[in-house]
Amino acid sequence: MSYKNKPGTGTIFKVDNKTSENYPDYKGKITLADGTEQEIALWVRGDDRPYFSAKIQKPYVAPQSDNVQSKADDLPF
Image 1: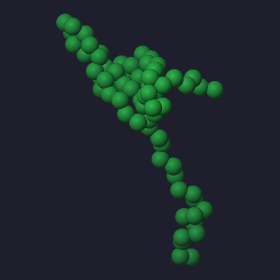
Image 2 (image 1 turned 30 degrees about the horizontal axis):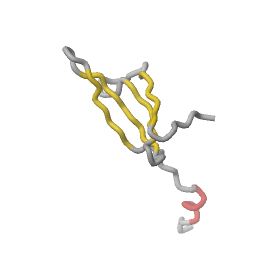
Image 3 (image 1 turned 45 degrees about the vertical axis):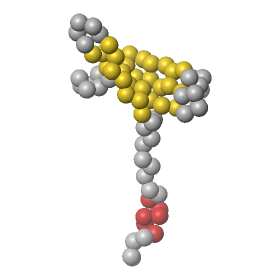
């Protein structure tokens, strides 16, 4: 069972295995006041006065592959 954020709250975790400089320093999920879940990514920016740069987007959903049987039914032989 995974943790579910209450509306208007979120959880963010430090990324320990960054694969490139473009990959975020922190990632997590937030739940908007209306209950919609969003993903959040944060990058630490600035040398003299550090700040976070943020990106919020809909959660990634992997595309589903088509049913192999339905493709076989479409073959002409």
